[in-house]
Image (cartoon, rainbow, N blue to C red; front, side):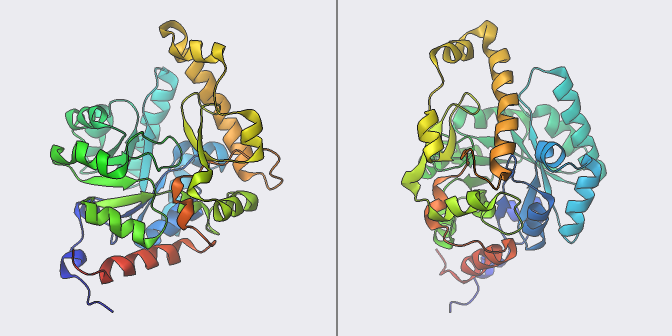
Length: 337
């Protein structure tokens, strides 16, 4: 056994910004981010991220009560919140502002923003001493985050589940490393060796999603979890049919029968300036229902299951805390790079 590396005991920029012990984020997932999962990730020394639409629409919590329940399960250790901010809907913008204000009132100080320009979130969060990390898939989005004053970047690569980027983890880090912010690797991390490889590249931490679906704390259906265990990375395909833009899912008979491309009419509506917003809104609302239904349905009638290429390293359903403790041990005991 290698002696603990003293520099790792001091943590990374991510651990210091988030107030956590191990540089690991349990990423926000619709619809899989239930309080038990988010709380368990934080309680074990990483940080779980609340996804407001999952919390309220899927898991039926009043938002404030849901945060309090998650914090209780986390043992009062830090949790974070995800803010999806790209929307021209005034109603949605007001709702997201309300959610952020409630989160701040309840003591959340770490936020992950996705889509859009996060300047208004940064202003609110920085006013109380919090931190904002921004999801990016390429340099131009990272630059918008820097312009907005974010504290860190979450680099979503082509191995990620959900909405992946087009670049590999090395190429994406090369694009954004010189911007001077902490960078978190999101995509392709399912086992300890993936984690250590990302840290050796120069990342400040990792964000994991798929690995945490295959846990008892996650409310995803048993067939969904078993599909993750059985899949290899070649079984992950991108489909446009859920949200109108590529989503990484497990190739199943249902996905193959449905196809992975939108039809010609939908494609035109998504590209034409006058109809783009309406089409994306329609796809978005439909995806909320589709993913909620398919991810939690134990009958597995419709096998639309999001996952990233990290499935290759996931072979068992195990408690969230045990997963994080394995990663922490690997991190502390790895030879100095």
